[in-house]
Every structure is written in C-alpha cells, then in structure tokens.
Length: 210
Image (cartoon, rainbow, N blue to C red):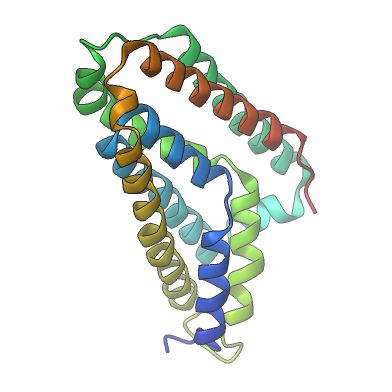
C-alpha cells in the first residue's frame, strides 16, 4: 500500500515504541498533572505536530543532514537541551495561586503549551534519527513514490502515538484533579514538573549520536 511493505510488522514496531516511555511521554504526563486535561491534550497535539514535521523532513531527505553531520547533531541537541532546562527553570520561578491557575491553564497557556510541545519534539535530533532509521525499512525499494511512502508510514506512527498519548494525558489529568485544587500542591506539582523538564534537558545534552 502506497509503496510500503510489511505493514503489520511496522504497526507492531510502532505500537511497541509508543508504549516505551520517553521524553515526549514525560512531557505530556507532566503537563497533564500540572495543568489539567486541556493542557495535556494540547501537549499531545504539539508533540505529534512535531512528529509530523519530522516525517516531512524524513520524506524530503532533510533528516540525512543530522545523520551525517556530527556538528549539526550537536547544535540541534544543545538547542533542545537548553530549551527544556529553560522550561524547567520557568516552572520554579512562576508559582501559581489557586485563583489564577484556571486562567493560566485554560486561556493564556494553551497556545504556549502547543508550540512548546512542537519545539520539545523537533529539537530532539534523536527523533529525526529514529524516523530516518525506522521508516526506510518499510518502504518498498521498487516504489516510484517513496515520498508518499514515507508520509504514509509516518502518519501511521503518529496515529498510534496520538491515541496512546491522549489516553495517558486524560488519565494523568483525572488523577491530578485534587492536586490542582490545592495551592501548595499546585506549586509543588509545578516544581516537580520543572525537575522533570530539567532532567530531560540534561539527559538530551549528555546523549551521544549512534
């Protein structure tokens, strides 16, 4: 279908990878717990928009730059790491009261959460390398429409990832209802979220290209 092969194997691989907790999963869970269901859903949309951009890059061959250039990999890696650490520090600086948490979660922050999700995903070169390594294995070498094949496989992966991360976001947000009703616990949740983001940034900064 669309110049692909072994689709059933690809789906098994995609779902298995979706289930493995990674930086994107932790970002979504942290957002859902700290700011509720809407923030969680928006973060899912942001992360998967980033995955679509990676799919597009892989389809057009742009990801090859990250696979072949150690300098490009390092630059993108450090930008992503610094950005995640910045988000974490912001969580420590900006405490929220019980009065304004609803406004922050539902109005001002939703767009910010969306583009932060995109940036968190696209600034992780590991994701680009993952797409570059996985997708070609399921593209039929005889296909004359390889770009379409890449898009089809990428969209399949994004679909399974969206379903799984939406489930995680809703589950995490439901469990956070009581927490978000308490000012002290709200600020504690934000600081825990900040620690997670800083940890993700450090983890990304210390990873090496393989």
